Image 1 (cartoon, rainbow, N blue to C red):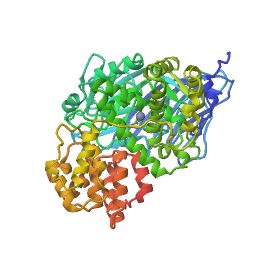
Image 2 (cartoon, rainbow, N blue to C red; image 1 turned 135 degrees about the vertical axis):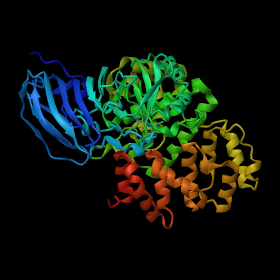
Image 3 (cartoon, protein in one colour; image 1 turned 45 degrees about the horizontal axis):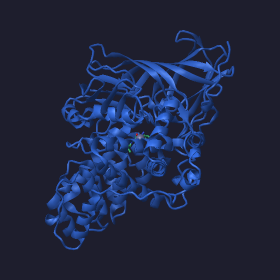
Image 4 (cartoon, protein in one colour; image 1 turned 30 degrees about the horizontal axis):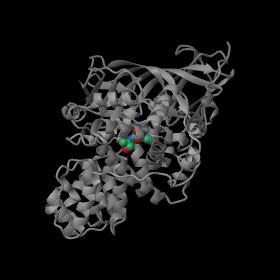
Length: 605
Ligand code: BES
Ligand code: ZN
């Protein structure tokens, strides 16, 4: 059989995968899984179709905490194959080495997951919104797909897939694929994903889920009690997709649906193709937090169509996505609105830079995560410094030129991977070289391979925040809170207000603010997350119960990290943080518990 040539992205080695796709790569997956809520395992078979580029006699897959039962070649009923699991690394897991022939076209692995699988969160009925049925969801990014599927778990490797999933008859399974819109009595479902995707975009959720369409190609899935509110909140979904297409070209994944998860979901959102997973903490009741949906939607281009080749190139996924997200929001709600998001993002960037320090290599856009858990190494820098580079480029070349560049970039690299060095040469060739002196002015190398923010970056400001800054001044100069003009403030103004308050407030000041604006009982998670650090620092009693409720129910790491840190910084905080964590831990996903076990120590069982 003639050997086909491997895509050039396979020449870049991924420090977070044992696979060697340059020799032999996978291009299609047939997955057969049974979901067992009692044993809390997935069990079944993964059959991989191979492209053997180099006459290889060994296939290397990533596996972590998997029980491998049998491996066969050329079909599930085919020849038994010799296989071996390598040494277990706490972060990378194990290499699964399968002996193949150069002519082998497929490898089938019969396996089961273990209860410790980090990608999976098994929720009891009490941990869901309806409290009646259990729930399961996966989180594969960055390198957790290998804890539920033996795979080439490197973002440079793409494959199509088909899956058969057996679930208890009263539950509905959904995947990053063509999805059912209603339950069937057998509990047996088939899925098809015809666009090739990397392993980190493999996703499965199973629960008491129902569907509501929002337009011909968009809709939302949620638990029955959550669905009506979710449909209200995401009413603009079709307009978002249209706005995104107007900016950077056609949506290439057919349908775009949302799945609202239980509150323990460790992220705000996850861009699983065709089916974005979102936290219920964005259901604010006033559509104020939907920029998160614009973000995950934007990944349908930046990330899912054009994919970072390794996690060192993560900024190519997230930086473009943040820029794109804000352009979508600007199209829908205008420049003054999008500028607020820009300023809030910039504030977060300045915090992260201060935290990491002026010389930290973790503030470079291009990262070196070799030997580290990418989950801990990925921070705000990729998002906000990445966005800031694009904003600076926009400032220097104008929107029209930048938009043409970005649109072509997506079109020409669709369903491919991109590394930082190749991106820089593409940028030079397509944009910078046409403008003499531009590259020096932009300080491109220092953005990407240097710390901090190059001096060329334009200032970031939002006209709607002028009123907020004025109110902050007035209040600090003795104007009572009731007399401040806060009419028409959105949650973004409120968050900016809360972030602009002095760090140490007295109980009297907190009481005045709380009585006037009702922060403690806000239904907006961003407002709560900005308010609690103040109440924690001052041991403000009236917020204790709400804080406790938040920490024990919400599993979103971005909110939890600053709150636990704030607790730790108070006199008896260590003990308090540990006590709350001991109660809350059972509600958190492994992605969150690994962070907090490190921060607080693992509580005794
Ligand atoms: N893809 C990310 C989530 C992610 C990143 C998971 C790295 C695992 C490793 C997703 O698109 C994201 O960025 N989510 C953000 C929301 C966004 C609005 C900044 C989040 O969850 O906070
Ligand atoms: Zn993202």
